[in-house]
Image (cartoon, rainbow, N blue to C red):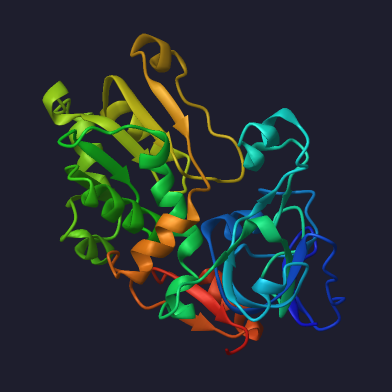
Length: 323
C-alpha cells in the first residue's frame, strides 16, 4: 500500500506499507481525499516525537469492510480519537481525552495512504450531494464549531481571531453566523481580504504598533480572543488585547514551548480555554447547506507530498482515489 510515512524525523513516501486489517468494531476505509492540517506540519517539527506511522487525520473515504453491514459502500468522514471505552473519561463523554486514546495520524496510522481503519462509532456518513472535495473539510469545520459548543459567547460581544489561515477562516464564519462582531488579525493582506464578508480585519503589525504606543483602551479590547495562528507569539498578543476577566480560546497546536508572563492570567483574572476536536454532524449540515464559504483546495498527489506540506494555499490536500 502507498502512503506518507513519518519515520521520526521526516515524511517519506512508501510503497510497502502493510494493508491495514479491520478488527471487530472497526471498518476498513478506502481514502478518496485527505487534507493537510497545520498539526501535520507541526509533527514534522517534533510535535509528536514518539510517533511512527502514516500521517494525516482529515479525510473522506468509502467503507469497504465493516462489522456494521449498513456502513459498507457508504462515503464517510471520521473523528480522530479512539478511547479505551472503560475509563471515567470515556464513560463521561470525554473519549477524546482518554489517557490511552489512539489518535489517527498521531499515535496510530492515519489517512495519507490508500486505506485506513477506524472505529465504527467514530464514523459519520456523508449526506448525499456533498462532494468529497467539500466533505474532507468536516473535521476542521467541526474544530471551529467546538468554540460555540463549549463556550458561551453572547451575541454582540466583540471577539478577535488571531490568524488568517484556513482554521481562522472557518472560525470567523462560524462566529459570524451567531451574530458576533468579529475582528480578524493576520499577517497577509491577500488572505485577510477573503474575511471581509464576515469580519473586520487588521494587520498584525498595526496591532503591535498600537500596543507599543499604548493606544489600546478597554473599549478597544475584546471580551474573547481566539488564538488560531499556530505560532506561540500569538498568545502574547492575545493576553494584551483581551479585556480583564475575558477569555482566551487556544486553538493552536505547535511544537516547542514559549515563555510568557503567567502573572497576567492571575492579575487580569483571565480564563484560558483549550479547544480542539468538535461536533461532526453540525459540520456536515453546514457543508451540505453551503452555509460556509470555502476556497477550492489545492490538490496534490501523494508523490507530491513535499509541495503539499509547504503549500501556502488556504487548504492543500491529496487526491488518493476516486469514487
